[in-house]
Structure formats: structure tokens, C-alpha cells
Length: 119
Image (cartoon, rainbow, N blue to C red; front, top):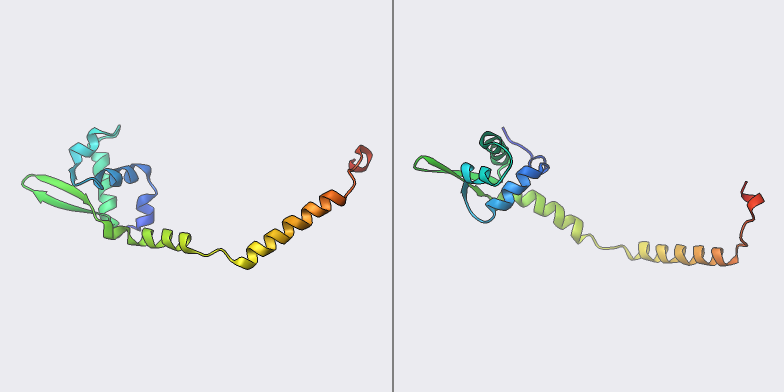
């Protein structure tokens, strides 16, 4: 079963696991030691991350090591890069400047309302 990477990253526990795995491969027991959740819960989170292709699993003897697979984060990187790279439309900035000036001018030339007029 394939899990969407954005769905996998929506959970703060999974994001913290990825942050820890960014430093290097680790075992479930080590990842669970620094969290207030059980080892089985950490294993379930790692399974979701594996199904989203953002972690790999390697067996070394009797131990299983999980590691960050940065290539699985490509859709997230592309999404964020697309948001950051969008140029600001000059016409939109010009329109904003015109509106600010118009509003400022109207405020200077509009007499203050009396209490009776607001009721």
C-alpha cells in the first residue's frame, strides 16, 4: 500500500522521527527511547513513513535500521519550491499602491461622523 507523502508528514510524531533520522539510521528501540509513546506505536509510524517512501529499512543481523530516504521528499520539495518561486505580479503591487493612496486620500477628505449619524 502506498501512502501519500503529505499525509505521512501531517503527523507531528512522524515529522519528529524524520528529523531524527536525518542525522543517520536508527533502530526502533532508539527512536522510541526519546518519545513518550510505545515501541509498537513508533513502529506503526515508521511503517507509514516507509509506505510513503520517505524511509528505508535495512536488516543488520537481528536489528532493523530505519533511515531517511530524501528522494521520497521530492514532491514536498517541489511543492514548497513552487510556492516560494512564484513571482509577485507587478500589476498587483501597483493596484495595491493605488488602493492605499485612494483610501488615505478619502480618509483625509471625509469629515468625521457624529454619534447621531452612526446610529
